[in-house]
Amino acid sequence: MTAPRAMSGVPDFDPVLLANRKAKGKRPAYFDDPAIDRLLSILMAVAGELAVTRERLDTLERLLEARGALDRAEIEAYCPDRKAGEERGALQREYVARIMRGLQQELEGLEEAEPAIEEVVEELRRG
Image 1 (spheres, rainbow, N blue to C red):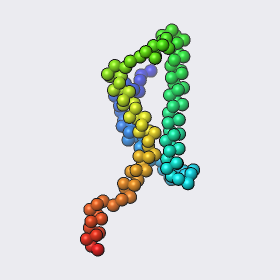
Image 2: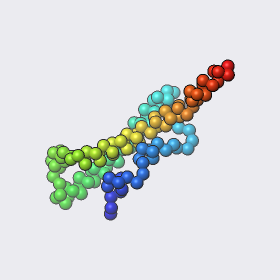
Image 3: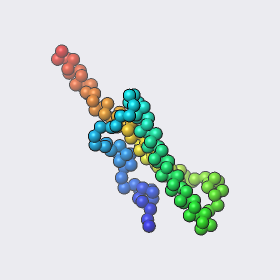
Image 4: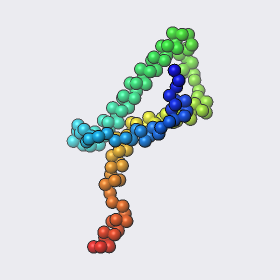
């Protein structure tokens, strides 16, 4: 099995753009304050990401330990090199883009709703 291209350091797509795709339909509202709904959306995205990560990490540790390939103390002592640090940085950017997707889309919606400054100036000139 080969590693996904993004994991091999060769992305074949833009994860930030992918994370910002808009869903069809209106976003559900659970609270009177839309800010609380946004916060809930972000929290649930983080919870989902963490649940998947914990499950995969547990699988990896169990497989490696069962094969005698890893002592768990090695995990605590690991210090990434420059390349690993850069790859982790890219993964972190992708992660933040996914969890902040709802807020980013809302901000983009506000920008689309406002007319360009040139249009405002022209309208003021016409009276």
